[in-house]
Length: 457
Image 1: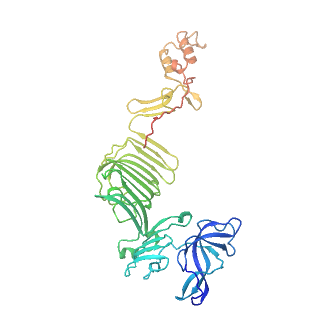
Image 2: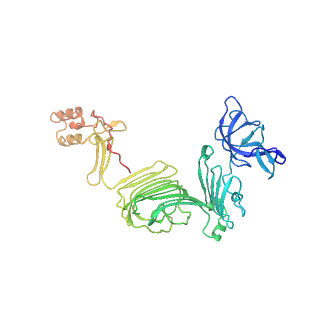
C-alpha cells in the first residue's frame, strides 16, 4: 500500500466491499480481527479490526474462520487515478457472512477465467479451459464443459480445507498393465446417443450409479466389487461396461470372488429377493449375459443361498453341489409370509435342545432307519402319558393266562402268573420297561457349542 503524499493530485474516500476471514474476536467487545484477502489493493498482510454493523451482527453470530463481507474505506485518485491506501481514521464494518462461490458459471466467457488483481490465470482463449490460482489459496481447474475441480484452504465445517470435483461421470482408476485393477465410478447415465437421450424424458429414465472394483492382487481372478443405489450393472471382469440398463432393482450389492468361489450379497430388490445372499462355485468363466441377470453374469452352481423377501418370507438352500446343470441342494427351508414352515433335508434330520441332548430329548428322522423320538423326561399326548411297547409285550406274553376263573359269573382276577409283571410295569419308568411314557429323567441342558475361532460365512 502506498502512503499519501500531499503533492499527489486530489483524492477522495471511496467505500468498497471486501472479503475476509475472521481470525479472532477481541474479548468483551464487538470487534473482530479479520484477515482480508480480496480488496482493490489485493490481499493484506496481517489483520485489520472490524466491528459488526447491525443486527444480526451481535456476539455469537460470528466465529473464528467465518468468511465475511466488510465495508472498508479507501482513498482513490492521485497521479494514476487508482486506489491508493486505506483511508486514515476510517472504521471497518462487517456486513455479514459470505459463502464463496464454489461452482463455475459455464458460459462462453467464463468470468472466473478473467484476469484480476487477486488471481493468476492460465486459460485457453478458445475453449475457456484453464487454471485459476487465487491469492487466497483457492485453486480452480475447469474444462470447457461442466467439469471443474476446486481446492480451498479456508472455510469451516464441510467446506474447510476441501477438495471438490464436479463431473457428470467421475472415474478413478489405478491400473498397471492390466486394465481396471482398481476402479471407482460415480456417474449419471443419461443415454449413449442423442436419440437415446431424447427418449429419456423423466428423472426415472436417468440412472445414477456408484460402483467400485478392486482386485486383491494383480491377478484379476480374486476381486471385490460393490454397487450402491443403482440398478445392478455387470460386475467383476465386465466392470468396464459403460452401459447401464434397468435390470434387477437393488440398492446395494457386493460380490467377492476368490478363485472359483464367489459370494454375492444383494439388498433392496422388491419382492421375494429383498435380501439375497449366495455362495456359488464359478464353473464357466466370465461372459456377458442376457436376460434378467443379477449382480454377476458368471455361470454359477449354487452352494448356499439365502433369500429374504420384503414381507419377511425366508428361503434357505444349502449343501449344493455347485453344478449348474442340476444345481441340486441337500437342504432347504422355507418360511412363508403367513408363517408356514417347510423343511427338507437329504440326510438325517436331528431336532434337539443342544449338542449333548440327542440322547435326552430329541427327534431324529433318518431316511434309512426311520424316526426315533427320545423323551427321557416324559412324552405326553393331550396331557396324558402314552402306553409303551412294554405293556403290549406283557399283554401278549400273558394272553393265555391273563385272568384266573373261579366260577361262572364271578369276578375274574388277574392270574398270579401275570400279576407280578403288571405290578412292576405300572410302577416302573419307561427306561426300565415301564408301561407308560411318564418319566422323571434328566432335563435337556440346552447347551449349543460353537467354534472358539472366528469363522466367516
